[in-house]
Length: 473
Image (tube, rainbow, N blue to C red; front, side):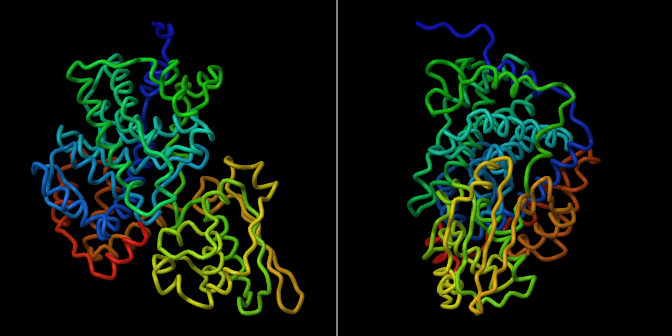
């Protein structure tokens, strides 16, 4: 039998999660929640929403809010809402860790906060702690883990557990055990992006639910392996993560005055895989300069190797493939000067003029972009015109990243657009966004729950939406 290390890495992490949280941090958490609300509500109008309603019919009803349906118990509510955030690839993301912490943390924290009648401050603090956990563990696990594992789900269960442990006011030892119990449930492999289905969404939902359950079980007295991260049979060893103890200590033993990493999270302006966004932005620059797409003879896109491995889809046939297609992102943006929700619909993918542009795109691994990744998601676009002239554009810090951020007003406008696309009225959407934005100064969550309950009536899924969702998921 191998004994655990004298100082489990979980101890370093849990201690770091106890540093002070400011009003500024809570304001940022509220902005993340606004963004998630738009993404999740739009997600439940897809075929996934219909699947979840059929699943929920077999679950015990409850008082906890779920998006677009009558209530469930807290754990099931976390699973439902945790499945929705990534449906249209507009969910927030930490660039270097490459995790979408909001997909798992927010649903778990909302469910636990409503069940425990928590304050607005407690909810936002739990979100800050959850984001920190997911991001730190994404950084810790590294690129070898991300190559095979859906890290949003595998780190998300830890993140959700820490958010819920905060809401339950667990002590240090209980919180460590909640982290350990979460690790026993970490799951999700990348085969889900190579085949059609809803497994990616299910994995995120599982992580939200499992994290909540881990915190509940720790509160009830269940214990787990405290060296779950670094142990010889632990999470990092089992999933190809980085076991460099010096690096781990530097990441996990966060100085008390270090800013919370929720401030480093990027907002996504376009409904596509984040690895496609630099290419979209390059193409939009060309469109703004007045380049005539009909006169383009050839297109060369230089970007980093991970983007090529995720998003080389020269002839996308489904909405999901369109969201993960560098070629389509470039072609559609060059021709239309934008990349909205319509860009990956059946008509857009079948557009012969767009298909012709896709055929002219050559993808190349750019040495500059590859060296800069993941600290920078970059791309360079070269156009050769029919008359022999050349045009080029380059993106180093893509729109939505901390160095090139969306303003709070732009994030709110994005959420408003997504809510209205989910059949919320303009006034209703603005009220919800206003309530969430006011949470850092609020004492109670009651008005938020009232607004969400009033707007949660099930959405009808049109046959066109259902058909597209089946293809895209």
